[in-house]
Length: 406
Ligand code: UDP
Image (cartoon, rainbow, N blue to C red; front, side, top):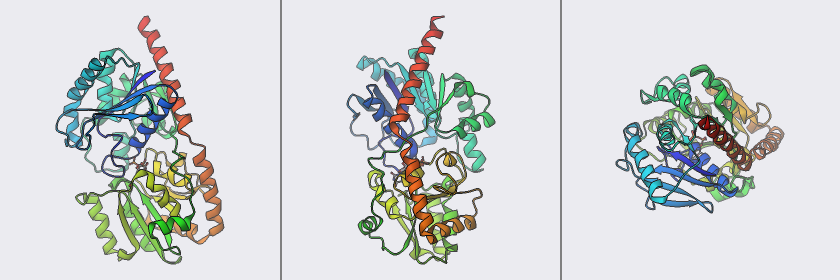
């Protein structure tokens, strides 16, 4: 198959952990590479940006990521809607020049969905969409935000018009059903995987030595974009309540943007609570180097208001690090309460502090959870995920061809 993946608002090769670059980027690159490894040709279309020096970059043996120009390279996300036509048109020009005919388009996030919708109609090919996050789930979790006013209406329209909605978890099926309407006949769940060549358990002492972390301290880890949806303030407050387990340090990995208001808020909260010597801000860390942080940590904490999945949770678990996380979105599909970590039903610092302390105090429990976490993470593979996605594309293509023939 020749498959087009559309990632309009973020480049899958962008530095992760910074603005707009997170789980979706990881998903896209792994999906593209694995589809390539099982014999498909994948074109990932993304918008040219300030770091995209080369227009084409190889993914696997025959596939590539293509930077397509549309508007100024530094256009803010909320202005991208005005560039949908230009981006779509330039993809069309690229395919015409390359004499390229795709069998199917799979777009990611609503803005790419608008592009996929236009192109699939123009080319007469089916369109699969993955939203990754939805305006209404985000709004339900966080009443403030700067979502584009037309986002949820566009999402609804795309749900109606696409040929298949591919979601990562069963929870998203429920969310769509509750918040947008009944689309269950066109939704398929394809769970993602984890790259076990990058994320595997290494010796804790050696990892700490490598990172210059004192061996005897307790290490609590947060990894992610520094964004209000991640609820990092809850974790900082929880840290202030942890007192019975020796020196505990919180490592905050992700986000380099000093201009980010929430980042500044977290920094001032750390000072206000007198935690300056207990919190380390590392900034964003290269994806491949993160395994050392996970292996060095005693626990990964993710206190999000909402997570469609939480890739960091699977990555930490693959490294044998139990997780304490909010019981939201797709997290419960990965973290089993009492087995691979703890799920906290409310975003109260006390509840997080209590469960973190339980894990830090009880070595046997920690060892048990660590083993269970590895087991669970190893059951999730990109091979299985990409095969499932490929089968889904084939079904959609054959169903679609039959409908056209009528
Ligand atoms: N990440 C990274 N470096 C960082 C911070 C994050 O490589 O400094 C990666 C992390 O490994 C994970 C992704 O960014 O794969 C974040 O995905 P997740 O689903 O946890 O959060 P999202 O950003 O999608 O909300």
